[in-house]
Length: 237
Ligand SMILES: Nc1ncnc2c1ncn2[C@@H]1O[C@H](COP(=O)(O)OP(=O)(O)OP(=O)(O)O)[C@@H](O)[C@H]1O
Image 1 (cartoon, rainbow, N blue to C red):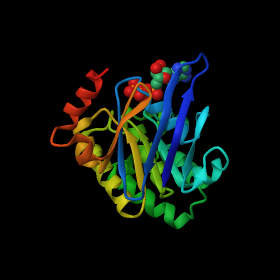
Image 2 (cartoon, protein in one colour):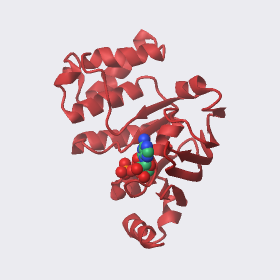
Image 3 (cartoon, rainbow, N blue to C red):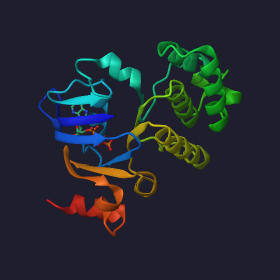
Image 4 (tube, protein in one colour):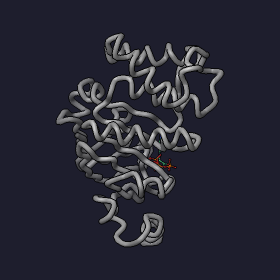
């Protein structure tokens, strides 16, 4: 579903944020991406979703290159950034319909999905209010509903659990499991290691732009906790 080959991202000024990173995310995977502040997670994610150009390497989504076929790739994915920047003057429902229009979702299916996810994330009663009146968590839930409205094959999330209350966190985990059970794949960054340990079948650890470990969660952590492995990785020089 997602193949990253030798990805290298160098910012203007020369900072190499991602260094020759390769990773494969298959259908059915909930793949957690962990690393310290500044390790290169967001830079990797922004390259995957086509926001950042990158200097070397390739990224394929469903077999299509993000460089050569960005529209084809984007039609298959949804991306939820760590701090969703929504159109503040729209209502929640206007924003979600705007996204559904972009993806040409038929009226009947979009109504059903907005009702389903609106209820699940307890937003149905708020969707007619203007986004500028929403709390941070309500904006995040709106971004999640908008991402799910076109049933993406690949869901990319940057720090999805920050700012969500326990009920919304629980619901998001349920929805993530449902998406992969129905043939999708998920790649997400997080600092919440105990959630990653329980939720993800696979884990990748990045340090200073380089992948230091990746694969089945059980294999990456062995008989230790993910937190212990993370601390060991940070201590190694
Ligand atoms: N626009 C930019 N210009 C120059 N350097 C950047 C830019 N964005 C990020 N960087 C640098 O690239 C490196 C990786 O940053 P990135 O945001 O990818 O890390 P991260 O793993 O997502 O961190 P965090 O957990 O703090 O969100 C850091 O050294 C950062 O300072």
